[in-house]
Length: 162
Ligand SMILES: [Zn+2]
Image (cartoon, rainbow, N blue to C red; front, top):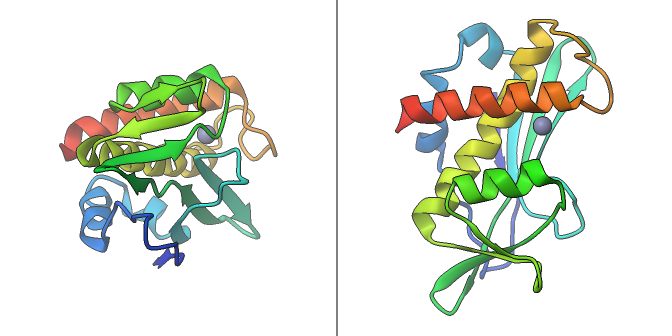
């Protein structure tokens, strides 16, 4: 499994180090971990996803975390990328403060890092969901039920890595 960091403009920051990813590894079953080809961190303002899991070929998974906030006057800020309630709930649970008028989210470093963990674990949840062959897994657009399942998976693991 590789960890890839996209290059981003200097005002943007990568939140999770390789050591941070190792902390997660201790809580994910190794047969799941071995199926993940890479985890890629970066940020594209055009994307409407905070994270994405893609399965290519025979049970080989690629994960992308689309979240690098930028420094603005001593704070961190990221755009609101998606209008779905589940997305904003996740942001708020981690301590992000969305402003829907300006479509931006305010973070401090600790909360932003928590959210990056949350997104990564949610995407790993999709891998677990597919590997367990749970209802509707492998479809192009995950069901609301799968999204809830992955949110619960992420929340559960967040409590352990604290
Ligand atoms: Zn999802």
